[in-house]
Image (tube, rainbow, N blue to C red; front, side, top):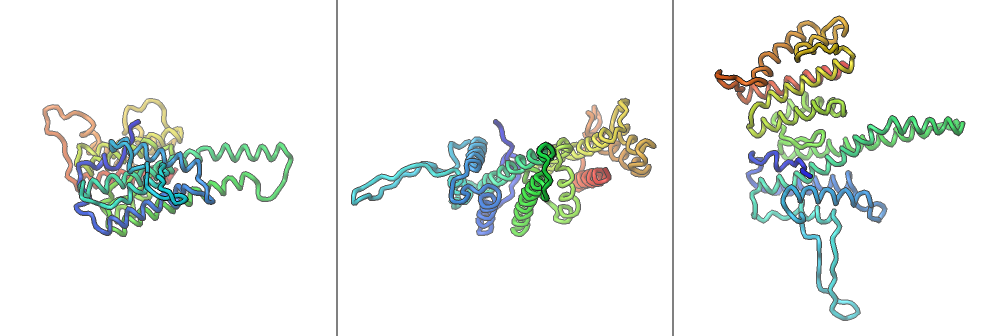
Length: 349
């Protein structure tokens, strides 16, 4: 199974020119967040079956993408003595140990600092993504679990303070809070080491402007974290990856994300009538009398102008005309504009 990893997405862009003590500390700190906060391997002194499965999965998925049989040697063998006689001690390290030996390995110069760091940051990304996917699944199941708990209490005719349903919700809230704290710490570690990276919704990506990251991007990723906005999330990540790799048409994918958000809102609010032929019609749905003026006329006109000037030229072949292009500054503006619009529209729902 193919796995999207950080090292592949940023293959053509150099992010680390050198490997210093700063990079070494960062990798140790990132690994400890994973091993101590996200997926503790030992619980009450015993091997966790669930954690073992997760560490094995992380190892297998990353080693496959890197083209390695194993991230670090798993089999060990050494000579010792037992009852005064030579004895060979051998066995297999646990997968958390193998992953630690890989992520926290001493840099030898056998590969470039850039490749060395990217491969190890890929492990961190996969670990956070695995935990976030699991947490998302639990969040989706929460309403059913709460309802089942309430029905069980009703069936038994019990009336006790601090219901089971409240306990289930409180536990789920604690899981979400713990994961958010781990994400915040990871991003703070990136910031303190001047590493222009940011984790959000399963991916580590380049964060080019701290102010934009703080005031726009962080809030954007938070509002599109709900599975409802999956397509919005995917297209915006594609836009950022294409911008960072100097690939073609990143603004087009940002506009696709904005269009998806507009369509989803129109559908969810039951403003979609079936006669829409494009983005402009969906924008009109949001400003119609039926919507109660969800957006104002000037906002409608601004959105239409954006799609006319930015999305449409990149969404259609230019024929014999000159290929449309945006400067890096214009591309950043387009992406940030789409993020701001999406964030604002979603928060109005």
